[in-house]
Amino acid sequence: MTVYRRDAMIVHIPKTGGASIAKAFGLQDTHKSAVYRRALDPEAWDCAFTFSIVRNPWERVVSWWLNTQTYTHTPFLDWVAQGMPAGPIFGLDGAQQWHYIADEKRRPMVRMLYDFGHLEQAYTDLATIIGGPLEPLPRIHEKTYPNRGFLSSGGRQPWKYYWEGRSDLAEEVAALDPEIIEAFGYAFEDEGEIPVKVDLGPPRPTVQ
Image (tube, rainbow, N blue to C red; front, top):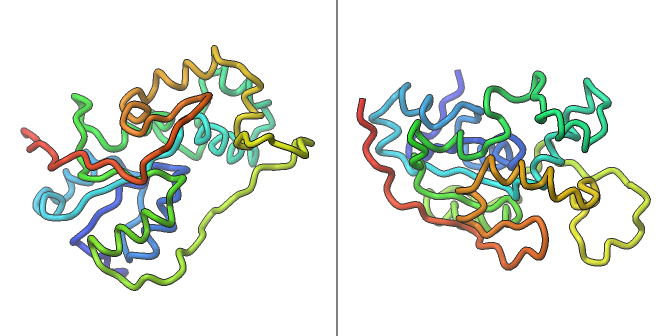
């Protein structure tokens, strides 16, 4: 039976690189929410350093859609317009990152959030906080964006081309995770400097 560390716990939000971080530090890797994880062992949860990795919501939706291509061939914008049906990959509320790390009152239950775009820096920071061998970060489930014929991105991130300027659909995604967007300053257009991490402070005690 695999024995995992108990001094730190990651809430692995799908499509955020959590598998790589969990493997590097010997942490249990599951897509269960913070509410579920704490209910299993409140004492262990409350004593551990709890954290999660989040991602620009519009980029994450593209990554999520690319995964759905293993069982459906719905065009990206049609899939978003249909409400991003999860299929077998994600559970209830899979599109909402905040759902994984907050309680029923949308209060955060983890101490630290890291940005997916700074995964290497997050890895280094975590090593100083919880300890562990700082070897090359394993890359698990890493994907590249399929070539869509754009030879020059003009500095724009590849995921933006999938949206084709559909700001109306982008607003629907923004409405799912306002807390994540506010915390990191994510933007659909003209995104500024994104911090490596956001310290949410000690989680509030959960009343049973």
